[in-house]
Image (cartoon, rainbow, N blue to C red; front, top):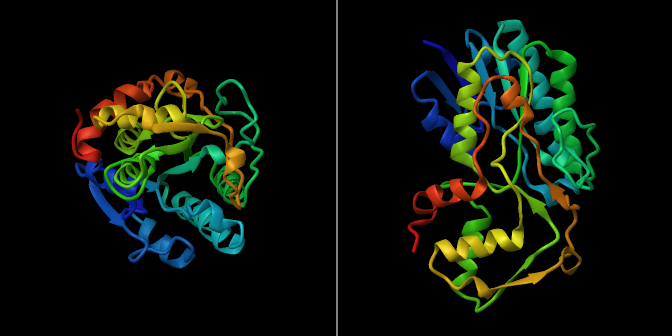
Length: 284
């Protein structure tokens, strides 16, 4: 039976991965049981496994602006430790990354080989993690970039919108940030497909297909919840001052899945309809 080490098992994606990968000889490590910034602990944990899936990350985008060292320690040094340990063990490494490695200025989907140009500390730290894999273990590392994740576990955008509906007649949501709402359970299944495939290295974009704005995403969430979507009102990003810049365009291309002979991601609306009763307690 294939032996798989999962890091970041306590997070939203990690919990879905724990369920989806349960058929393997799975060691699901949380932050409390494996510190990926500890090179010695990582080498010990990776020894003897066939595949490492790294879902551990520093994801506090705004806090990263004032905690650069912490972000780089987890998002850059951690993956470097995993890459070196995986190379020594002869294990494949599947590393989860982000759309924030791009500058967000495009108008068509980012191809997998687009040059990185991160605009935030968080994005820079994740880009450094990708670069570490490409430098230290290019022949055995797979990078899976994702964006706009939501799921059953942990905080996310649809949960926030539904919570705000309980105390606000209307909610203002930006129209000028475009991306791909992505169900974490779908991402977990795509990662499993990579594990089961002969793919040894490369970059894949793990987002649901199509694109929308946060505004239209929120309206879709309200509609599925049986709420009036007109309660979502449009605004723009300049009305929200945040420490870290947000990409205005977070749409990723999916060509690598086809090229590897694997199923391409389904449309985001189809995923949301299936996810809604599981993640958010029902639909209209």
